[in-house]
Amino acid sequence: MATLKATLAFAAFLATSHAAVPTTMLAAKAAGSAPCTRHDFSCFEIKNVSVPRPLLGEALVRVSVSSVNPSDVDLAVGSIRKLFGTFGADFAGEVVAVGPLCSKLKVGDHVWGATKGAYAQYAIAICAITGKIEDVDPSLVGTLPEVGMTSAEALKKTGAPWDPAKNLTVVVTSGSGGTGFVGIQLARHYGAGKIITAASGPGIDFVRSMGADQVVDYKVQEIFSALANDTVDIVYDNYGAPGTADRAMAKLKKGGTFIFLPGKDAKLSKHPKEGVEQINYGLMIPSANTLNELLAIYDAGALKPHVQSTYPLANVSGAFSESASGHVIGKLAIAMP
Image (cartoon, rainbow, N blue to C red; front, side, top):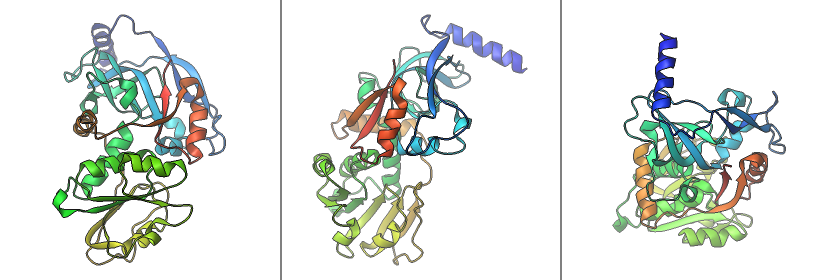
């Protein structure tokens, strides 16, 4: 049965692919058995590997661009990194083959989304959670899928889109990184009346250009110490530092919401204010519907990508080192050869 399924999948691959799809590709793989450290990312190597074949409900995408997210760095320094094969989540590119039961996509479609193994010339995408980007240059939006879906889903858990007449005050705890600058723009699009965030150095002017109304220089003052009690409706803690929930409680109004992204040992407050809802965001769930919504917001000019640096696939290690430095404004792109 397994042999029959493999034969059928290979036949479908041959029947629905461009003749120009090669049999091998370059991809970033784990080198050796030791994990990366946040000071040494030489644990990556670029290897020549077989191009994967799409199976049921899958498509093969020629990747144009990917990006580095903090979650990619966290995975690279973890002990389970080798279980994930090639690295990278964000992708934008062109469909070059489709497997059975993938009627949503066809060869030639330009697509974007999140998958496993996007640091490669070709990657497998799950058709049901992949979005189309017709008439959009993949290199312009390929760094946005993970941070876009994360921030959109997080804000929606707090009730977004909001009635603009409520004039809500929204805090995005860290404004200049990926989920931050996207979160600021989405908060504005979703109806926030006032947006407050933290940044430093050149990040201050950057987050203002993204739509922040008040910016706290975190090298001078902790963001919640700069805010009066009972003045905030929503806190989107996209940084997730320990103790943030406790510091935010006094600033939140009764009826407000605190949501945080896990990953840096953040926890819900054990002493929440009465009437304040607390939410652990959990894991981002890729969604074609969310991608379609983000594309519409992008097309309307309300979501602008920002790439600080673009690295070739051959220098994934350099991109990870820059990401781990903690001084990235916007996103880092990985361009495929």
